[in-house]
Image 1 (cartoon, helix red, strand yellow):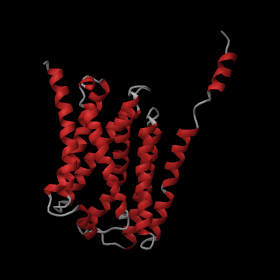
Image 2: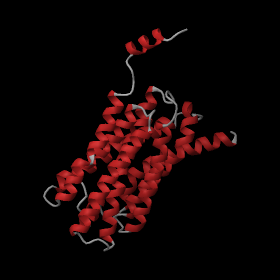
Image 3: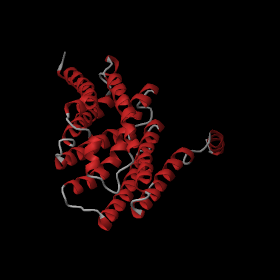
Image 4: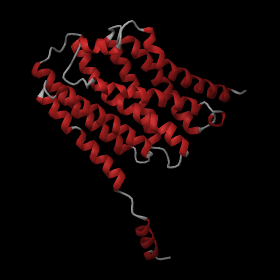
Length: 270
C-alpha cells in the first residue's frame, strides 16, 4: 500500500469514527445539552422539538460514512477534497456535545464555529463542483447529509452565540438581547441565501436539505418566542422570505425548457 492509499484509508476511517463519535459522545457527559441550554435561555432559542433534527442528521452522517468507506470510493477525487473536512466536523460536533454540558461555553462556541467552517467548506466544494461529480447514490448519501448538517449548523452557530453571551453574564435579557437576537436571525438568513446562491451546481438533495434545516430552525424560534419577544419573533418571520425566494428561483427559474432549447438551436446558423 503506497502513501496515497494509506491517506485514503485514514480519511475513510476518520469519517467512520467521527460519525460514530458524534452519536456516542453524549454518553460521556453527566448532563443533557437541553438542560444546560434551558438554564441559559435566550430569546432566539428554538422550541425543543426542533432538536429532533439531530436524529436524521446522525443517521445520514452514518450513511455517508459507510458510503465513503466503500473500497470503490477510496480513490474518489471529490471525496478526497471533502473527506477530511467532514471528518473534522463530526469529531468537533462530538467534542461540542461534551464541552457544552460541562459548561465550557466559550470553548464550545469556538468549536461550533469550527464545525460551521468545516461543513461550509465541504458543502461549498460540493455545490461549486462540476455537474455530475456525484452519482445518484452520492447525491442522496453525500449531498443530503452535507446539506442538512450545514443548514442546521448555520442556524445553531448564531443561536449559540447568544447563549454563550448569556451564560457568560455578558447579556442579561431585555431590549439589548432582543435586538441582537433579531439582528443575528436576519444575518443568518442572509448567510443562508448567499450559500444557496453560491452553490450553482449543488444537487437538489443538497440545497433543499440545507434550506429545510434553516427554515425548520426559524419556524421553531417563532413557536418558542412568539409570546416572549415581538422583535425576535418578527425577525424569525421575515428571515425565511429570502431563503424561500432563492430556493424557488433555483427550482423553477434559470433553465430553459427542452422545447425552448430545441427552438433556439434550430434558429442558430450552422
